[in-house]
Amino acid sequence: MLLSRAQAEVDARLAAGDLVAVVTATNSFVTRPIAELYGIRNLLATEPEIVEGRFTGRTAGTPCFREGKLARVRDWLAGLGLSLEGFSSSWFYSDSHNDLPLLSAVTNPVAVDPDPILARHAGERGWQVTTWRA
Image (cartoon, rainbow, N blue to C red):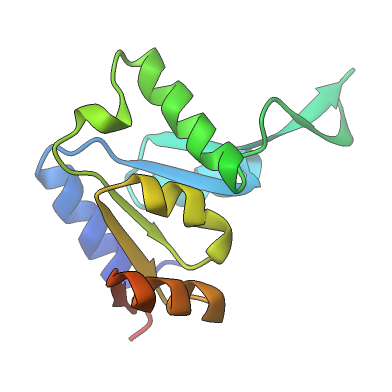
């Protein structure tokens, strides 16, 4: 689903020269075309294990889910010679309570059309809550 408000946010971040990435639990073969449609080159996604050209049903490496999502971001940034703590400000946008570890690690967590658990958590912590579905 391509949302104009999401595209506007991505465009603004890219125009500002920000380091932008899609960080998702969904497999890369599903999400890469979507990231590309938004103009985002960096994708951290759960990678399916492939053996002899066939999907095994298992994941390869750390799944990009819950704490694994934060670990994958930290590893990716380290590979660039960066750290999350080295940024003066960092943003993460999510609709799912499963992303609480990464949302809690950035300086600007944003709950976008959040599930009820994330909405409650964001409200308790004063995080920004918004909608991209107009």
